[in-house]
Length: 151
Image 1 (tube, rainbow, N blue to C red):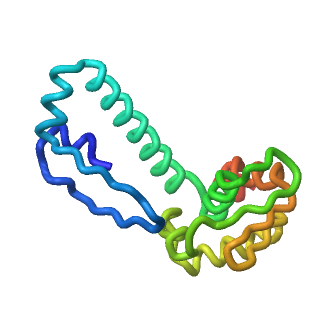
Image 2 (cartoon, rainbow, N blue to C red; image 1 turned 90 degrees about the horizontal axis):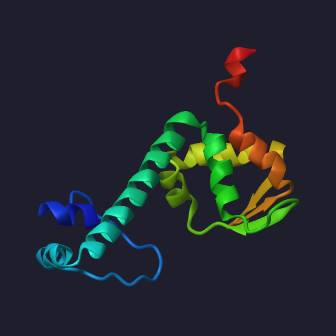
């Protein structure tokens, strides 16, 4: 959660709240830096983990800025799907308010996106999404969001 900040010896600028049972381990930053100086492989591993985290944050920003709300919801559902093709049923991992926040939307925008996804064979019932055709949903997610403007 805060490996990059531990390297700078500054307070962590954000907080987190767990929504499922979790185990959190606190590692003293001073001790971590001392161990990194003694073990360069640890330092390289921590830098690699920080880089992977940075890549995921860049991908999140890109998703929020370059995709429509419907596309973001489609990508989210595709990320939950364990099936490769055809139809699939996925369990929503948390409530719709948290999903909306994760996708940079208001809950009412999420509801509108779910409604628009019905045209693509997606139905939502309580905490379950039924996807009729994963390939159709993939096409929607990959579509250029500026496409309507080029017509």
